[in-house]
Length: 429
Ligand code: NDP
Ligand code: HSE
Image 1: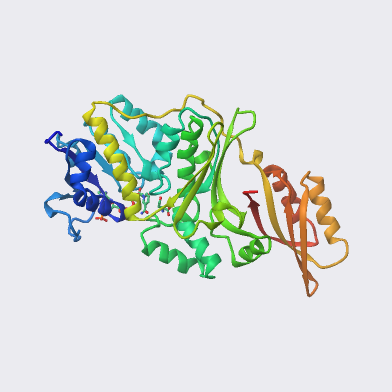
Image 2: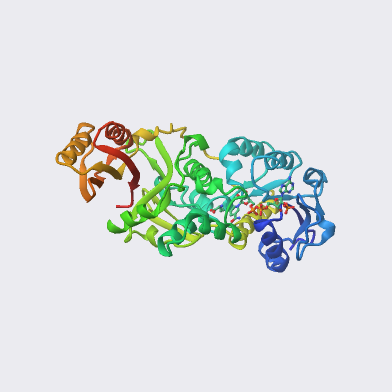
């Protein structure tokens, strides 16, 4: 075993970074054996240097991350600051100074992954980011390496721990949205700005990364259709229950049947209680990957939190350190298929639509005619009347998003339709 250590710069020492530092210290001997050389924490960049950080040698703390990377003795940087800047500039500086990078930063990778991969390749270095998608779950590497000989056609799953935690609490305990979000934040699951979680940006960033890997194409964050979960109400859960369903925020990536394009979307959806994703509780994530030869694979585990995410970061650290010793690099970006991303209107799925209507003769027929005129076939209708008003719940067969949008627009114009209370996709059947 080499005795000269590989030197690691830790950029960020918050929820994830502090756990990375702890495990690097407590498991130092095992890591050295697995890598073939010791890995030494050579510097820790933070924003607030005076904050007490248990288990970290205060002499390692700096607020000048750039100077740390330029020092000349750093082999690997672990970026767990988050956000776009200064993370992007620091990763670029790392590459310019011969430093390979491990990152957990999905927001940055979804936005600038192509440029960062190109910079890593130009300098003959590694860029690894298993922790950026689905916390502790090994997913990026299995998709990129173990399934490299297969053809992935579909990926569907829960990729945000915070929103799954909130939806699970709302469903199982009747907790309010804010109360559940506060608990998820206190547990270290939420992003620095939890809007990224609840409005679906975090899941959309992960969806873009996964779609790129799955389909060997570039999928930008803007290509991902995104709806958050802030509008999901107790009434939606009650409706879902009546249908034998629950509600999850899903990321769904699909290759078109003709193979010529892909779709990527993130939105809340009703799924049957019998579907394996329905039993994914708290901040756990689960992802189905459907590949031509392998069939259907399910990846499941903790999707957020300091220690689980640190596990994924350390797995990357070991891989990158081994590459360093072998004077090699791991696989870079694979985007050779250059498939276009289809617009949202092309997506075909089932819908659950809840309407507030006048409770009088002919209304049901009028509503049914509107669906038929737009080519959307109805599966079930349930009506509940009260004081001249009624609530009408329509579940459709599979229909293109564009046809459903046209139907809803026409429904809103009917005198007898007082309002469209909710529209939710139904998946997993
Ligand atoms: P935190 O907010 O807990 O930690 C951020 C760290 O970055 C802090 O130590 C902070 O310093 C430091 N920092 C902020 N700005 C600077 C700067 N300009 N220079 C140097 N250091 C800086 O975030 P998390 O640990 O939760 O997340 C880190 C990354 O990991 C993000 O990309 C996130 O998306 C990702 N991630 C997080 C998961 C989780 O469950 N939390 C799961 C998977 C990925 P200080 O301590 O002084 O404030
Ligand atoms: N905020 C993210 C989540 C962290 O809740 O899933 C893990 O990526």
